Length: 82
Image 1 (cartoon, rainbow, N blue to C red):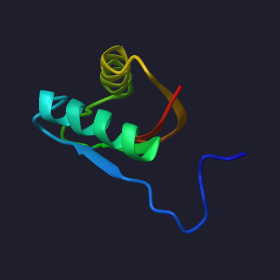
Image 2: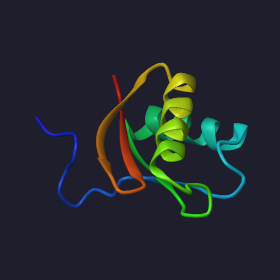
Image 3: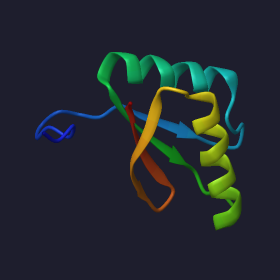
Image 4: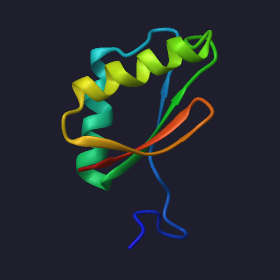
């Protein structure tokens, strides 16, 4: 069964020039707990190249032990609870 339900909005967290702040991590954890799925968009101001983007995603996943990447498109990842 797909975690993406038609008509149901997925919470979106935007990561900007402040990077992966403690507040952003807490909000992602809260949204995952509440909705079981969340989109995380890395704005162009923080991601200069693909390597930097991948390192930001890895850093995020290290801090979110109970999350996995469902989908990765452009500078957006969709996370769900394991």
